[in-house]
Length: 267
Ligand code: ADP
Image 1 (cartoon, rainbow, N blue to C red):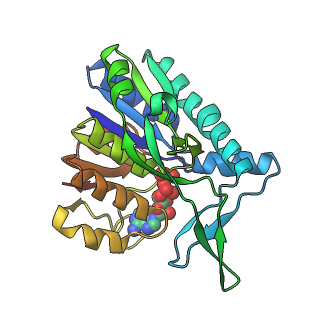
Image 2 (image 1 turned 90 degrees about the horizontal axis):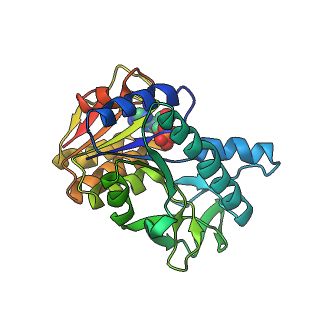
């Protein structure tokens, strides 16, 4: 069982990802695909005239401000745009792909952040109506049913809060929890970089392997959104997933390449 999380940045072709996924499924591999929708949400929000906003926490962490309207747009982008594009790409290649969201059958359960501290002009503001949170529990039953029926699940945010509200969740970390719940042998996090870079953005400075003992060092190298991937790798390893690979989604056969060890291998 392999869980593959597909990034959304420019330069990532769904065509080569879907072709590679189809080849793996045709060989009998049980595959679950997870994706996010950050870039698609930014694009759609601009098209709909709801300018995207980002907030910075007092510790310097930046995240999307998910007000109720942004949550709607986030769901349209994730479910309507990204998920359907991936499902279509797989179905066209003969895969019985099924799109599900974290809400379906309570797949991704988590907690909404009741209060977020945001730095604004040197002062801290408390935001209470934000619709973001994190996935804490994955129910693998629906995924196993689909896999047993010969289908390939393609999972999209949002997740579901304890009060049954949709929440904007980080797909890298949700993929880590999903891999653990499915007892996957490998979690691949594919993005628009060759892996974790020691001297970002120098693509020659790839860190090719990280052991559990050196996870702190890996975390100190990652900035921005790469931090979530290293955190996801840590969570997956500690939850029993034997191997996590942060690999390049821009190359031909990106999943196969990552499984062969191209990228940063955490084990
Ligand atoms: P995706 O949307 O594909 O999941 P993200 O944009 O969330 O990917 O995260 C990948 C980004 O992390 C890279 O495009 C890069 O800008 C950034 N990054 C920051 N530090 C590093 C690093 N040390 N190595 C690689 N990428 C890094």
